[in-house]
Length: 216
Image 1 (cartoon, rainbow, N blue to C red):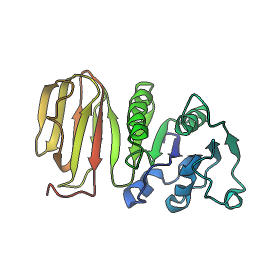
Image 2 (cartoon, rainbow, N blue to C red):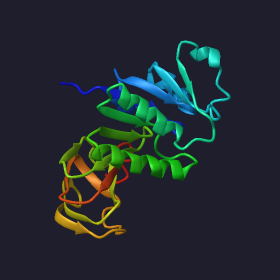
Image 3 (tube, one colour):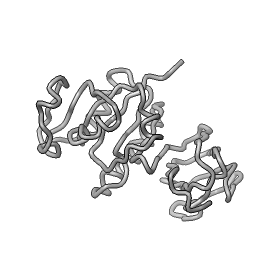
Image 4 (tube, one colour):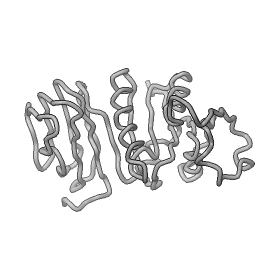
């Protein structure tokens, strides 16, 4: 059965690559403030627009007259992105694509999206984060395979000590590896095609660069 997928349009940098367009095709969408500017290039029609609208002041509201707005004050206890995610989950989202979640000028927001992705995955939600050129996937106890082009780069960031980490079909495979917290051992690996990952304990994120073939 196909999971109910929502794309959360965030305000970070976004390149509308074919991989990202394919990931969001047919999904429902909610825009978080300035993330609305990504809707057109991704071919999405958001069903809700949330936020304090401070980062979308340059957008013509009349261009989105058919999209219901859910305004929040600037002084609030959650980011616009978190509010958008909560709205998607309330509407039955089982899979989330956080588009515009990585890179950009606000590294605090990008890091928060990675942490939020891990928390959502722990709650049973299937999560992908993307800027188009870079993709991130939470890695917990479930095995995961990512379809990556041969020669493309990927890294694993451990948010805790990792145990039982295995990577197959990569230039630098690992088998039942223990990764200390803060170690750079899993930075800049190279895919040999679709890469499979598994983990016995710990919390991590896979960061992949499918269009960066510098490892080929």
